Image 1: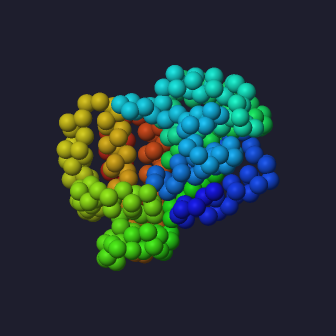
Image 2: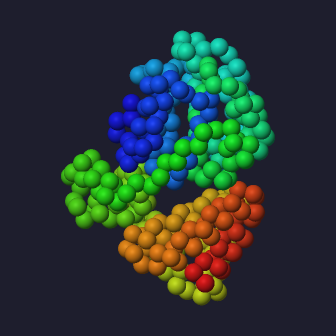
Image 3: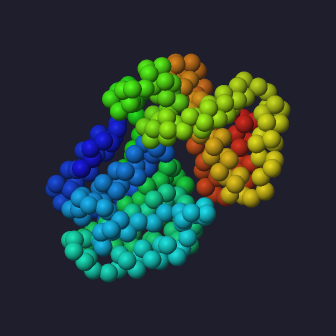
Length: 297
């Protein structure tokens, strides 16, 4: 059911038990960092709920929605289609299952439209959502779901996974991947397949790490170059996520090396506050500037 999932044994064991005991709730929210396996787990869980072993998207009782290509949010039209789908009786399975990928991208009206379906009692309908940060979802959505945390994978597990799956890759490269991926198996695979992207990201993260030791003025000048050419709010939001991701990986590395763990912990709290501000539509550039003024200062 969950073969090949790396480092999420607790979550996989729990979901397997739910299926075996037929004690399934009406809604689940899998939350955790990007590239730790949430989407794969969600789809495998959906397939198990439908007793399906073939191509999941071809199943008549399965529906999946996400951000459409070219968009940055999940539109209300997509949610309305999901709601209509879930209102129908199952065709061949004992239930209907829907999956909302990147639920944090739901437009406010789309989230409201989803609420009624989330309030349905358990039985013939199950909805699975995944999100990177549950705090960016409306409380009304979170309260109607069983929240399941998918955490970062340990460096030891990451190293074992890479050694087993990519045995032909030299050990030095694998160790560098472990550090670069920061507990995200999917990110390790992505970087291994795109060396140019890996180099660009490494350079960017080294710059961000160095800025942590600079005065606020130097940090502000760098942020002006990062955000200065961007006019679209969503582009600035995406850039803010890139900067915060680099900071998170830098902090992960410091904790792993045992340097400044207390300071790194405080910085993680500041990052969480920053994400909360972004979720409430505060200007992305202002939020990042505020973070860079106060972090490690």
